[in-house]
Length: 62
Image 1 (cartoon, rainbow, N blue to C red):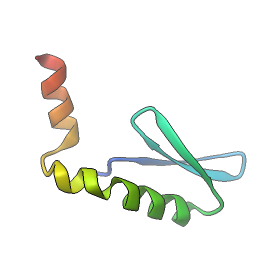
Image 2 (tube, rainbow, N blue to C red):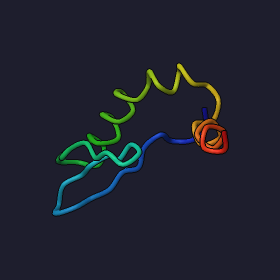
Image 3 (spheres, rainbow, N blue to C red):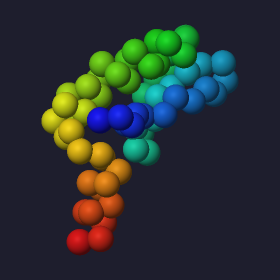
Image 4 (cartoon, rainbow, N blue to C red):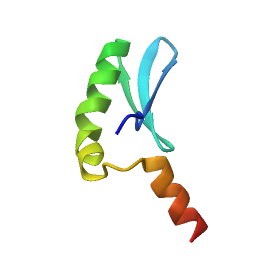
């Protein structure tokens, strides 16, 4: 899978990662947010090797 499942955002001098509509954090450093997202979402990436966006688009059109 070549695309990120998450986005990194900052708000009020703290870092968060966003997965779908959910935010997780806060983290002190951007690198902490990236590491947490990568660790927590790694099982999803390995379970669904196809593009998540394509998979979700297929479900939406069904």
